[in-house]
Image (cartoon, rainbow, N blue to C red; front, side):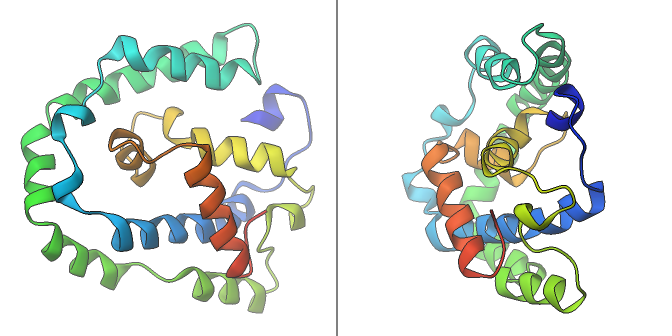
Length: 185
């Protein structure tokens, strides 16, 4: 999205996704190791649309000062916010049953090292800087930091955003962890 808006060449989407799997696996690790449902107040996890709209618009103003991309993303994201509000009972059930879900999810998630090794062994890039053309660190950081604001589908990044974890420091730690697993920036 950034490359298209800024009229820059961009790497194959699949290669970008492959590289991104390593910090995303690090995000799953963070969820498994840090989530304590007793410390989550569901009242704080359901922002009003008017609280989130400026966040979405500002995220995309960087790549499109006209505001058209921000408008398109807000159009999608506002629908996600409304659906999220209706999911409060499911979210509370998720928190109440976290030990069970944690065990089930942990069986489905691959550690970052395994992903990094698989990409490396297949000859695929493992870092954003290894893509052709390379994605600059600041662009990769911006993309991961704002990925949940782009679409009308719920992701792990949305969960982190709603529980108050998804900020610059958290995303930087994901990239640090990805780097230790052979991927990342």
